[in-house]
Length: 381
Ligand code: COA
Image (cartoon, rainbow, N blue to C red):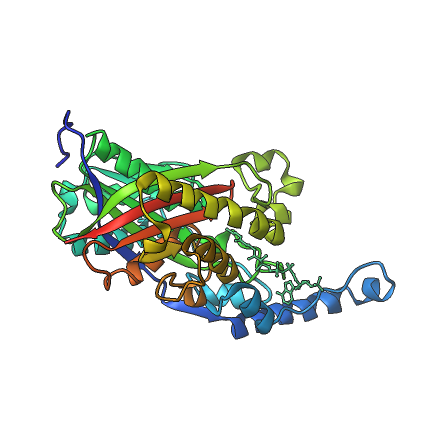
């Protein structure tokens, strides 16, 4: 049942979160073995051109490099065999009929069901669904509306994409509906099948991403369960950059010869991203903490975007004023890889139950756009 619009403003909280983790996982060892088999095939097929100096041979990837550069040891995926097959090297998820639940909606629904269950919330009492993710399976009908229907929710849903910051932008959007009195219960669902946009043949980035789905139930404190997280404040920021880019789009069919070039997948200038995003995000966190009257060193935990262990170490150090422990800034990169907008939500989902009433924490995302979002929280109940 949709809650009636109220003239009273609401106070947004996070009631619960949910997580769907694909059963299959790829270790760095498996990934590098497959990549290097592809390199051997490629170099053998182009041996003459390479010998004549007309083509550069491809170089091997390495487990040591991946772990040292990123902190990633494994990643969950929806289609392991096809990704590891050196002749395929991308997920193969068979198309489903229009009368079947699409795969992206399916994993979103699984995460959403867990959030609803943990909050003790009946789906019929949710007012809206936002599907906030880096890639949508199709332009329309919206994934959010399919998820809404599968869960039996009245009201409305829509999709939003702010790349790695989709989930935090979704949380602020949901919080604003509640602050304005337009909704009392909003699901922010982030199904991230990032294996589909990753170029598994690109040595510089083939190790980065993994698949997952998360859900965050944002509600008015008036109806939330006793144990919840007060949203102290949310802040969003975007600054245009080409350093993380994907040119895939519906207009590509106008130039079929370029429809499959590598720029139609994830491409980044990793070094520049690292250098430019770390100071931007640290400054944003410190400014927002000051605005909210939260002393940065009093933050009990930071659930940072999970792209790179080194970036998180630097950001946490700038905010806390000392090297953050795993307890202060937990990582899920090692087993999940970079799961785009879902990363900070997975960290929050897995590493927040032990905090006590009154503890403050921060969910923070950053990524393509550039885009960054902060959600300062205080544990209640
Ligand atoms: N295996 C072995 N060596 C590799 C390799 C691989 N898979 N990929 C690159 N290298 C080599 C490079 O060729 C280079 O060699 P050189 O020094 O002889 O030229 C060296 O390793 C360093 O490469 P570089 O790309 O500069 O690595 P890096 O230390 O910058 O780490 C990233 C790469 C991508 C992990 C890192 O830049 C990063 O995480 N940046 C931020 C990414 C991010 O957050 N993106 C957001 C995505 S949403």
